[in-house]
Amino acid sequence: MPKKKPTKRRRRAHAHGAVAQSEPAAWTLDQIHEGQTYRFETMLSEADVDSFATLTGDMNYIHLKNEFARKRGFDNRLIHGAFLVGLMSRLVGMHLPGRDCLLLELRVKFRAPAYAGDRLLVEEAVMQRSGSGKAIVVKIDVSVPAAKRLVATANAVVGFTAEETS
Image (cartoon, one colour):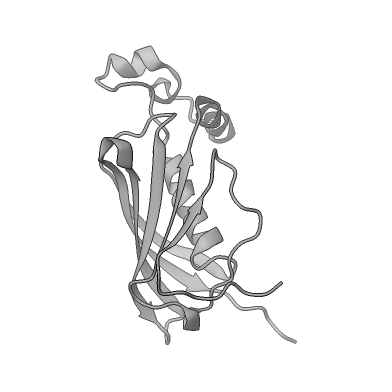
């Protein structure tokens, strides 16, 4: 399978629901430059949040019961912060850089709630590239553009893997 070619323009992907593309991009460290960006949009349904709760065992009512969340000042039940982190992992592991990377460090701040049914925009920008360290530093934002709401921000260190030859 041929590698995706690098581009200096913004790359955009649209995905619906929690299901992503099946084949990861295959950017190499040499193809990535500071300032390079990638973004995708997705919407997580209540069923997605329920599945995540079941999978992780985090059955906190703030994520599962609208009335419980409303009584605590939220519009509805919240998407798990760890689910948002999973979208960040998807961005790095599937899109930029993709197949040959490994998330080494992630520092996340949750800034506002995200609700099932929100259309989320997940964006990444390469802030730093280290050829000698075989890593990049990226900034990731998760937002709800329709509500002008920044939900989470993160800084990540992403390393690169290589196939071992004998």
